[in-house]
Length: 146
Image (cartoon, rainbow, N blue to C red):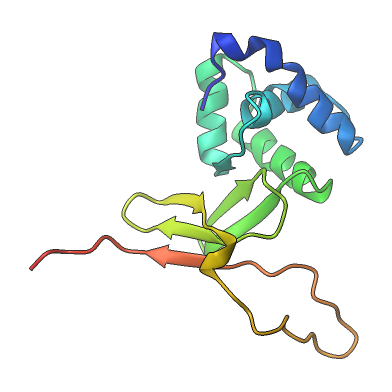
């Protein structure tokens, strides 16, 4: 997940991404933003995988800073948190509503086509509440041959 030298020209994407949500561009936030969007592609990361990628580039960030930064990015609307189970959360830079595949064998989260899920109607919220988002995670197991 590290930036490639040929993507150096796109390094400003991270700064632009942060400023689009008025997030203060600290050194650590810029380093993480460049890893997340510096090449213009969407990412699904865990805090641990982003921490490892940052460490590989020599960025000086702690795991706690990565968690806090991902939370700040979510709060600013730059990312969505996708909870796969009670133990694992992924952070998605693609913020439109879309379903996901969770590949149980590898622990990878990928985008699923919107056509993978169809609702007859949006779920009704209880009185006094509104539906803010619908998250769909389709768990996939590898077929075993008999």
